[in-house]
Each structure stands twice: as C-alpha cells, then as structure tokens.
Length: 295
Ligand code: NDP
Image (cartoon, rainbow, N blue to C red; front, top):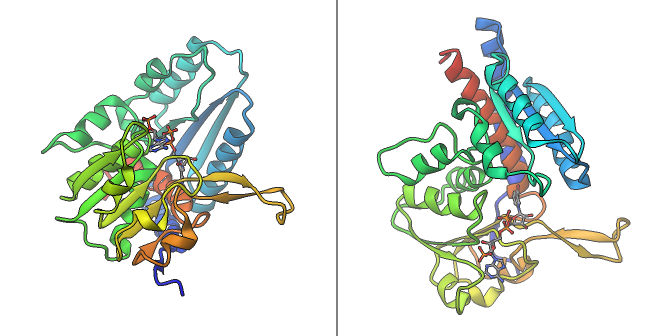
C-alpha cells in the first residue's frame, strides 16, 4: 500500500547523460574540442578507488576525456599541489577533482584552495561556496550531489518556492550547500544536525526533506508530514545475509515507512547516487563551454 511516487534518479541521470553526450558531440563537430576531467586520488582506499573508476567510466561514456592520477598514501602535499598546478595550466583539462577524503597528513583546505575556480567542477572552492551563499552572486559551479537533489525536484515538477524544507546534515559537501540551494529556490529552510533536539518535530513540518546524515533508516515514518517529498542522499551499507556480498545499501530514511506517508521519495540505490555523477559530467561540460565561449 505504498503511496509515494518513486523519484527515479537512475532514469533521470540517464536522460541527462544522453543530453550531455549530444552536446559534446555538437561541440566536437563545431570547434573540435571535447571536455576534459582530471581526477586525483591519493592513497588506496577501496571505496575511493571505486568512485574514481566509476567517474572514468561515466566520463568516457559521454565523450569527456578523463585523466587520472593515482598517488601513494605517503605522497607529500607539495606533490599533490604540483599536479593541481599543472592541470590548472592545461587547456585540455576543464575540471579538476580531488577525491576526498585525503590522507590525514594533508591539509584539505590548502589543496582544495589550489584548484582554480574556473575548473572547480566539484564546487568546493570557498569562492564558489561563498557566492552560492550570497544574494545576487553566481557561483561558477554548484556542488554535484546537492545540485542533483534539486534537479530531481525540478524534473519531477516539485514546487520549491515558499515551501518549508528541512535538510538533515550540514556537511560541506552535501548538507550545507543543499540548504543554500533550497534557499536560493525560495524555500524556507531549517537545518537539522547531530546537536538538534527533537529533530522529528522539525522534520514533521517539512514539505521537502533532504536527508544527508549517514545513519541507516534514521528518518522514520512518524518524522514525516503526510504528502512531503523526500530526497534521501544517504548511502549506508548494512548487513544482509540474503545478499551474496553479505551487505546491502540503505538510505538515511526508512523507505518502507516513508513510502506510505510521503508523496514522492528517492530510492537507495537508484536515487541521488546516479545524479551525482551526472552533475559532475554536466559541470565539466559547462566548464568547457565557458572556457571556449561555446554556446
Ligand atoms: P558527513 O558525515 O560529513 O555529515 C553528516 C552530517 O549529518 C553532519 O552534519 C552531522 O552533524 C549530521 N548527523 C550525524 N548524525 C546525526 C544524527 N543522529 N542526527 C542528526 N544529524 C546527524 O556525511 P556526508 O554529508 O558526506 O554524507 C552523508 C550521507 O550521504 C552518507 O551516507 C554518505 O555516504 C552519503 N553521500 C551520498 C552521496 C551520493 O552521491 N548519493 C554523495 C555524498 C555523500 P554534525 O555536523 O553535528 O556532526
């Protein structure tokens, strides 16, 4: 007796990748240039390596040239800064992505600051975030995961203006920019975090919830106002004896309960996840078009 419409991020992401592929081929035919994306991975975290591999595959599938750099865990900050500086100067590279987290001996702030803002396709440079927060300013790039969340709301015709939105989580890469974006879309935004008392009383007022917490099934049906729209960013592995891998992925929202009370909801997997990569490719295309003044 589920009632919520399923927001199918996988198929929207496919649609967007098809649009990007067509744009890139038009660009290639007309000016002989295709977008280039450089990814720097330091260390040998398995999950990070998987993300980088997926980004490469996705890049190639739409016609973006991909350049990867794999550096050992014990690299110095200076070595990473050197690669960034070279990519900053390389006209065939339009986007530079530093796969996070960096090893603990490196200063993440120094490294992210070194990416020139014209190639900051992750949108994490403080200048881009600052502009995102300011009225009347335009960031060159918006962070991919929050941008994907808003894109899903748009493509599903969800009205944001004047609505009450609650973002759960305030990280630099998801929660905080998601809240800024919703505010730019004229929602009235509250942010819930680990020190919030009675979060359910706040989420219960929301017309739109974006959950980016990293706590499996934290948002229960009773936290949700009937008819609310739920965007679940969480990707949490939980034990699952039935799966051959021994685990499955669940969101921050208890899907089974939420789908009986919300009007629309993203599944995990297949919701926000595929949108993040699609937005990275889109940001890379936007960057290349801007660099070559191609409309
Ligand atoms: P972080 O760990 O950086 O941030 C988590 C946020 O949630 C923090 O602001 C924290 O509060 C808050 N929080 C933690 N516990 C609670 C709680 N019990 N109640 C309320 N708030 C809480 O995570 P990320 O933002 O990087 O990622 C969040 C989730 O999204 C993860 O599951 C991650 O895997 C997933 N993710 C998915 C992506 C995708 O493409 N779909 C991309 C990026 C992330 P405080 O600030 O007080 O510590």
